[in-house]
Length: 184
Image (cartoon, rainbow, N blue to C red; front, side, top):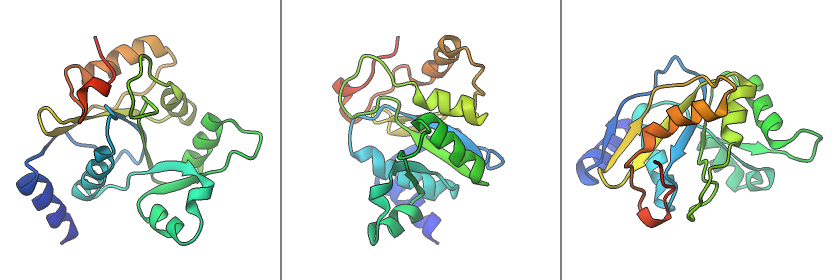
């Protein structure tokens, strides 16, 4: 019932569409979600999670997961990130992949909703370390579509892998296009 409600709101009321799909057999991956130019991206992610029926996750500092909001954040796929140990962020998140049976991590490589000239590469190294594919996900406000790309297993050659991944985002417009990362 909830899935039908998500579909009705997203497709009928909002006029958006979904192109592509995520194979449910892929239980662990890093979803490269772009462009991230607005807080509106959050609810689009909620809709995609509800429409696909797939568990999708995100990480946040452990302080966000205190009672009472921690219960809601976990329900929404959140996983607390504890950086107090000796592990760096990539190692810490890769360790989460090892603990979980299902972990589809959504990451915005821009790292902010402001204009950036380079992407952060942590998402790539997390996928490489955890040995999971990267799935490019475009939030295109220009076409009112969410485009779910094909999974790519990182080879370790970040330059060539990024050329392949970036092709998925050419001509994609964020909610605030002037804040979007420019792909050539």
